[in-house]
Length: 410
Length: 113
Ligand SMILES: Cc1cc2nc3c(=O)[nH]c(=O)nc-3n(C[C@H](O)[C@H](O)[C@H](O)COP(=O)(O)OP(=O)(O)OC[C@H]3O[C@@H](n4cnc5c(N)ncnc54)[C@H](O)[C@@H]3O)c2cc1C
Ligand code: SF4
Image 1 (cartoon, each protein chain N blue to C red):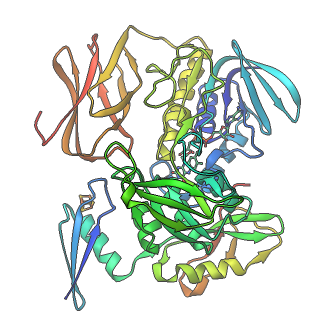
Image 2 (image 1 turned 90 degrees about the vertical axis):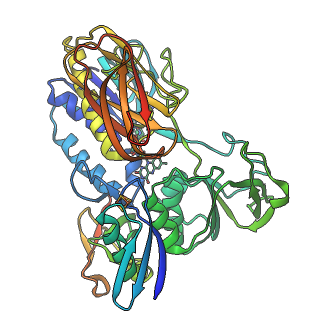
Image 3 (image 1 turned 135 degrees about the vertical axis):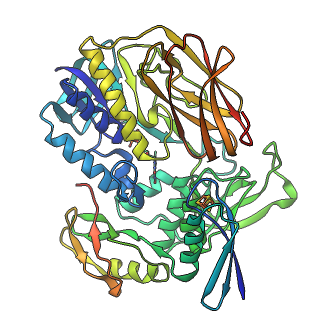
């Protein structure tokens, strides 16, 4: 098989970029290992998706459904479901699926494989490894897709959104969620989820607290937990026992980059370094969605996919022009600012960033050669929320540095 | 007079609100804009939530939701109604319970299949 643009991954990033590449005149093949398009959204049955993109509050499967219908209607997109990409070569990928094992050649490739979850091994959880230690995404799939319950007495480690959502879901299904333990002093989850998933059901959330040790031979029998100091060392005299049969881990996501060889990776995002056109170091490979940086809103994933589909389509048609490079850097107040390089030119550009700390009534400023070239006022920004900043880079030729100016002073 | 401490969830600023209930009258302080006041009043009088769950069918479980928010106090009762269902199959967009427990909300299938 052969195509202009090949997309790996049929989640929102892959579907949105495939649609956009096709609308911009390219032939597209979209490869998804699962039976249905939709990605992780199919198991996120709660509401809160699409407020920005569709101006309507949808559940995950509904958001996926709308995109899937658009993709299936598009005559320039060939969808291969039940098909796994096993290797990325040079302008080609190898796949394995219901139609056998074969190669697909392409002019441009979009990697949109999403994330996998950190596991007990990844975070070196102490104690035994009995049955009943599961990641939140696995629990989400078991309960929402397979219709199976996972346990009766639950402890959740990590207060990210997936953990919070699962605390509510398991409670509604009749389990007792005894506590959510968070090693940091704040939650990376949305406040709305803390209110509607924990407070509504009187589920306690303990900060600066973690599991010291898991106990149990065949099945989890309980956990020893307690507080940590600022270096995350266990404070032994706070050690307590909590009886439970299930430990749910919600301790972060890692981009699915193992298969992508020969491109350098940003240790802050674990995704590829990309330029303004979302090209990786291998210029025929483009990246978007959670595999590039973890998004909290699917709306932003869809918008990023749309941008990247256009760039990949232009590249496949040999119409993508990259200008001279402008480096992007930032102060210690940011976790990252993406893309990592821009091009000289007239157009406006939008950068995406995450802060390292909460800022209130502050300016985000872009500085080049000592001059402020753009600024954006933020009433409040938190690390849990990806933010964007659109500005004109007209006339800019040198490195752009992003900084935060607090208390409304520039 | 009763006092309630709430954190506003309407924007990332997360103002700490103090709502004082005096009979029917609710006064809110600590908010930086009026969305905070609306939020606190609703939480104190009749907090509403969309309920999402899944329905059992012969073809496996299918995700569903209430078509609009229902009173928070009725969440578990609505769950019971959903749990009672045993369907042959259910398709995207299908209404499987009309006006559940007189809340005015329908139970709709959301599964992407
Ligand atoms: C477990 C989990 C739960 C989440 N829950 C929520 C939530 O409750 N609320 C929320 O707002 N956000 C949630 N998110 C975030 C959510 O993932 C993003 O908002 C968004 O769905 C990411 O879109 P994506 O297209 O980048 O990735 P995904 O939706 O993950 O899609 C990636 C797709 O690529 C496919 N794929 C991967 N590798 C291959 C391969 N080698 N060959 C073929 N196909 C492949 C996968 O099967 C998948 O369909 C969750 C994320 C995870 C990992
Ligand atoms: S009161 Fe207004 S400013 Fe404060 S958190 Fe609520 S919405 Fe934001």
